[in-house]
Length: 68
Image 1 (spheres, rainbow, N blue to C red):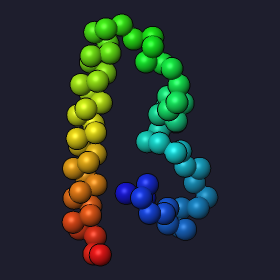
Image 2 (image 1 turned 120 degrees about the vertical axis):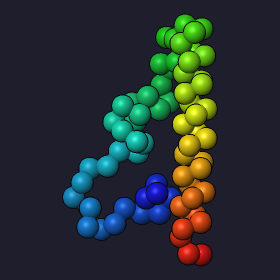
Image 3 (image 1 turned 90 degrees about the horizontal axis):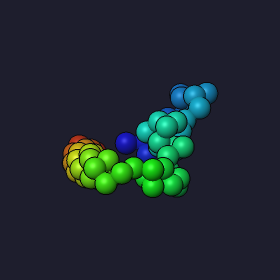
Image 4 (image 1 turned 60 degrees about the vertical axis):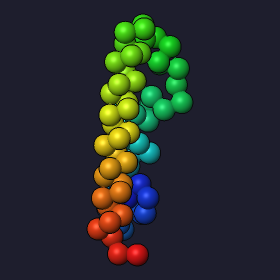
């Protein structure tokens, strides 16, 4: 959940990406989805919906564990 706070100073010497991975950083803001056909777009959107639901759940769980 460091995305919402800050990376601890003990990890300052690590090069961090803005997203989950270097691949996601490259994908963000690109037009790669235009290369997908209709079936691929449908599959992509199903996976994306599942990932969004999972991530929202994890954020909520973290908020419940964190005081304040």
